[in-house]
Length: 112
Image 1 (spheres, one colour):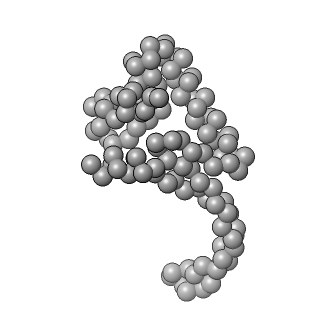
Image 2 (spheres, helix red, strand yellow; image 1 turned 180 degrees about the horizontal axis):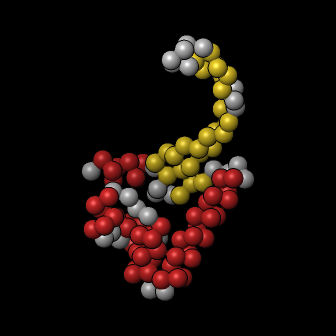
């Protein structure tokens, strides 16, 4: 089994560390360097994985990545909110929200 840290994702280039954000291009670069795929194949692979995840979520399915975490969909009912400036009650429409719950392995790694 290959973990993201095994691919070197936890130790990316200085640009990713400087701004604190891991991008699609960063992921594709790691796939290119570690797995030996061409840059276009690497980018395509990353795009396909992300597309499949987005498609599953849009179909109403949760996405669980072992050792990383779970993207969870939750339906929130209608509720009453309040405008903080005026104090007037305003209905908030029902909606679906997505949350992320990190796995215990991920939480342990972050805590170190």
